[in-house]
Image 1 (cartoon, rainbow, N blue to C red):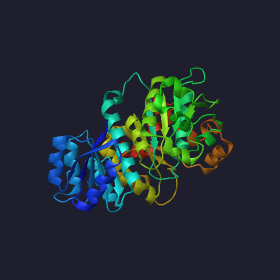
Image 2: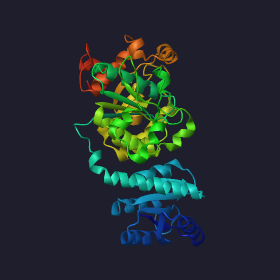
Image 3: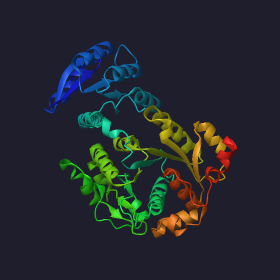
Length: 406
């Protein structure tokens, strides 16, 4: 069945050009074309298109207000906005209002077609899978590790946390407890951090997507970390395979792993792309990682503003990495800037971390007595809802939180 499209553009020439481009594709059906905001709202209510392609300069109403009204009156209709420049403030406002995607004008035909198919697929999956997305207590928890700042230590945290959870649950004797997905699709390096030699990657799994992904199939593409029993779905071996990983692949993979594993860790890229958002949607907990520098804090605050529009605040745990760095920014500064209580602080130890990466041996095993390893072990137990051995809840909270809440 063709995807129904409404095109809204105040300029007749650009509107007709876009309609002509879309009509060349038989999988699309342009059901309406309008020239102002009021006609857009009326036409959406009348014809119920699957997708609205909306010019950001449409006459009659501010585009953010229009997207808000479209989202409220037609929540099952995807909205793609064409804007003049990548103004991040405008983009943030559009995302908050409910836009599904945006493109910079002049957009290439293939980019518009790709956005339409991507948004349509995402909306369909969200609608048909709404019940399945509810967190079922009988299924595994999904822990997404995210940071908008590259180099924050996200993969380090994901790898060591996965190993720590696997060891805590005695995964070697009880297989099927903890899985880790490397969703850094272009430059993933979890396999190097864990000294793995994978025969399969998520790219190979994506090629099977047309037949549907179930737990048995996904299991064939996992690589075992022998020292802990952690199961890892490795990123593609080369960047060009990244484009083959769709939102559908990510959703089906996580859902399949939730059926078999108690915890699913997802190491996500810094970019909030469709596949990243798919993982965050599934997450029971989002570990939002930041560091003690102004650029990281600025990006983290921007990310928090967007994530708050999408997820409940209790779903997000703010984690400070390299928390003991002496860089002129205090822990109090961080909380004041971000307006969120710090959930955990991971100390800096460059020697241990670099040695761990070079040797391919996670430091929660190779340097298990170090403060950085102990803190990640404590975080693992907090995720499980248990006190870490030898620590009280007060000790886990750390001096900073004690000062704030004591």
